Each structure stands twice: as C-alpha cells, then as structure tokens.
Image 1 (cartoon, helix red, strand yellow):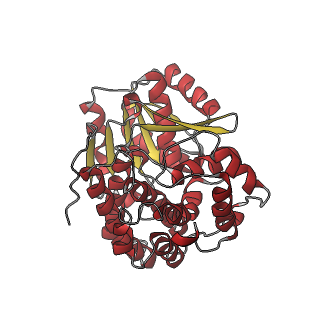
Image 2 (image 1 turned 60 degrees about the horizontal axis):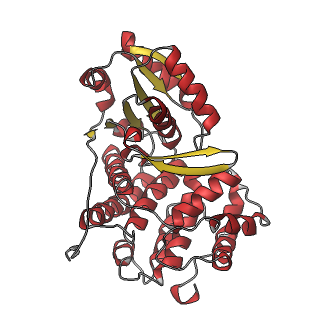
Length: 361
C-alpha cells in the first residue's frame, strides 16, 4: 500500500549518521571533519567512567568532561554546563549517553551554537531531532531550533549490548512512541509515514530478540536502526497527546522519562484511535490485534515493560492535577481533549489497567 498524500510538505535536516559496531573509535575523525580541536565530553554521573575513557582516547582533542547531565534537562544544570564549556574554551560537544545527555548537549548548543557529536547508548532517538525539552520551576517546555540539531550521530551497537534489559525495553518504547504519534500527525507526509512504519517494524522484529539474548549484536544494531528512524520522524512532524502527557508527568511530577512513555503510549493510542482508526492501521498490522492501543499494551507486557504509573511512584491523588495541567495549554490532537477524558486515561495508566477500547473513549 502506498502512503501517498495529495498534498503535503516534507523537510529533513543535514545530519551525518554513521552505523557500525565499533564506530565510536572514529570519533577523532568526526571532530576533525567539523574543524574542531577542543571537545567537551558530556555524560550523566553513572556514565562518568565512560566519559573519562572517551576523553582519554581523544587525548589533546579533549577540552574536558562534564558529567552532570540529568533527566528532563533542568535549566540550572544547563547553566553550569555552559559556564564549564566556556571556561575550557570548548569548540564542540560530544554527548555520550541517552536522552538526558543528548538533551544537555542540545541545551548547551542552543545557548552557544557549538556543534554536537552524539554517541547514543540508549534508544531515545532525540539525537535525530532539532527539538529541545527543558525543565524550569517544575514545568517542562519544548522548542525547535536549528542550533539544537546535532551535526553528527555515531550509532555503535557495542555500546548498547550491555544496556540492561529493563532499560532497553522502556527506551525502545520511548522511541516507538515518536513513530506511533507520527502516523496521525497533523503535518504528516509520505516520508514521515514510511519512516514511522519502518521504525516500528524494526523494533517489532528486533526487540524480542534482544530480550531473549541481550548480547545479540545484530539485534542490537537493528534496534538502533529503529531508534534512528523513530527519532528522525520525530524531528519532521508534530506530536500530540502522548508526548504532551509524558512531558507533564515528567516535568511536573518527576517521573522517569522512558518508563513514563512506555506506560502512557498504549493509552494515548487507544484514546486517539476512535478518531483516526485508518491512520493507526500500521500499528495493528505490525503488532497484531484489532486495536492499536491493546496491541502495544500486549507487546509491552510481553517485553516486561512497566504498566502502571503507581509503580513509578506517582500518587493516585496526583492524577486529577496531571489532567488539569495537560489541558492548560491547547494543542492539536486528532481526538478532542477534555480534562474528564484525560483523567480517565490517567487513572487507567496509574492502575496498570488495559487501555480503553475505541468505543469507550
């Protein structure tokens, strides 16, 4: 079936992408290609040893290391990192890690226009976009700007081979959410739909193999391929209800990013499927079943993903507050968004119940 549309616009960023086991060892070549010679290596605290090893391998090309990246990209952390980058006279950034580290690199680049090289160690996919989400005073906001788009991405399957299975699964579902919402995006186009479908197919095929054998390098490579596709489509079209809810829950209730995406995704798709069943048909075709939301809920359960917000530490009394926050600023969504319906969605997600069927939304 063709994904042709009678009218559409499409765009893509100029990003250099390299895939391959061990490709991280070509980092010095990429720094030179950018015309840079003082790279600041970024990471989270748990990945500080890897960041130090990377800096050591760079030798004189390393300007320093900053290991303070954290979830949801707090502005206060970014300000410290910017000050450090300026103090060591960095002329480029190397972000080694998942969405938290990539987010910090983007936030620094937004303020300094320093070029970025990202070496992902999860499947977040945010490295493929010009989108930055950052948190200040308990509120997470997003922006899109060319300065935020990384110039180079190095996808090395060896770096995700030891990623714990639980983190692998939630990170993958986080990436899959980009593709799932892209299928019904207001500004979708044939290219974005092809990317989304191929990304979902890659995860459907490879993630079960990774769960069965985490050291399977070929399966790890295919999941990174899926992450790249899902991240690329995120950078091309707008998102809707799912991402709005996750930003609300993460920024205002400090819930972990990937796990929240994993739990909310089936419920958000079930909510919207009543309005766009035909557009979500690829999800049903790829994962099986008569409902996209239920299909992804079943897939997530089979992969061992978390299913309940209460298991992430969210209090039941926060459900109503989260629904109120999520409707405070209007945004496009294929199905009408009301506080009452969102509260029902969040109650089900909080309890770990299956998503509501289309006729019950």
